[in-house]
Image (cartoon, rainbow, N blue to C red):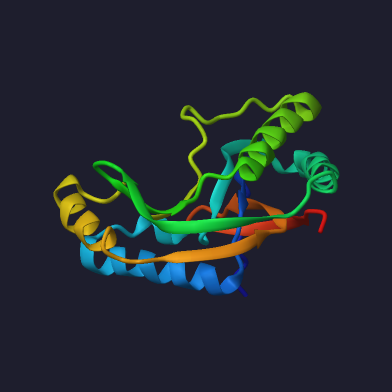
Length: 188
């Protein structure tokens, strides 16, 4: 009998996001698959369709109960709200995404989460850029030479959806893909 020893890392990568309902996740995943097949950008397929609220950070698994407790406390203080997705945009020359319409409610949620985690757990926001809510379709593995044809395709695709933001979700990286750890419902 062969026994395999799995060495677990001391620290895991995590991030916090909004996940749309399953039908929208499937639609956005189809856009990611098109980008992979036609433009060679596969990296976006490593995570479910999402809007990042708190970018990836390292944390020991032993700290997970404290983080989950704070996310539960935080989510119970936040009201759900509608969010609109409106077409495609990009961060040239490599990233193409489904754009979210400007939303004060979403901006408040993101800022409140950032402040809550800093105040309660001392977690500094790891994002170097400002908050620009979106769902990535083609990621940084999109070659610069493929950006123009990819953008020419996606900018012509009409895509509008609306959904209720009713939870925040903690995801962890298993070494290859981002996995859902737990969702925390917002107040209805």
